[in-house]
Image (cartoon, each protein chain N blue to C red):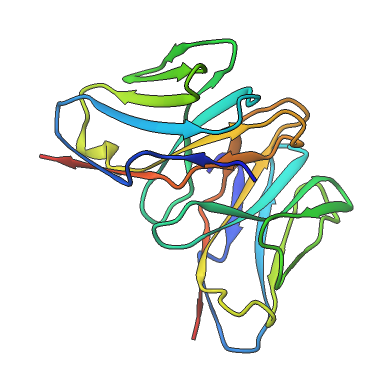
Length: 113
Length: 113
């Protein structure tokens, strides 16, 4: 079946720098995408979402970019803080898949003080 | 937590025993899911339910069973047929029918001793 994949398993950034986490999806029909943050030993938390009729969406310190041409999703975190250290997952919804989200493998973000 | 309670947080199982993981929600969401997460891995879908008294197998249902007798509850039983049950188990809910974010519980860590 089709699944969401991530380009890098681990990303290490300096505190204060901007972080960019990437995600490739394979189903061009996917219409909804979400980024989750998972801290060690906890459940994933919603960060931001975007629908396929948009290219960009901004939240507090985070921006999600969607490039449907190359089926690419990215999460940008501005002024990365130590509290941002976690695993980040992207997820996609495929229409007709009864609403089940397809999750990627995850990228570990390490923030160096 | 978002109104999803998983219990217990830690669970130890002896070889050959069945154990049941609890998931309760007060979000009035129709859909509920169980995922398994192994170290350094993404989320794999075990079972899901979109309505009371109905549930469907996910990608790795073998060795697991569920019930959905009430909207609020979706317990997962890990049977002795599951040969490698040590993992982190996550319960999630989702509002239906539109594609929306999934809300996660804090997880149960199951260890076979």
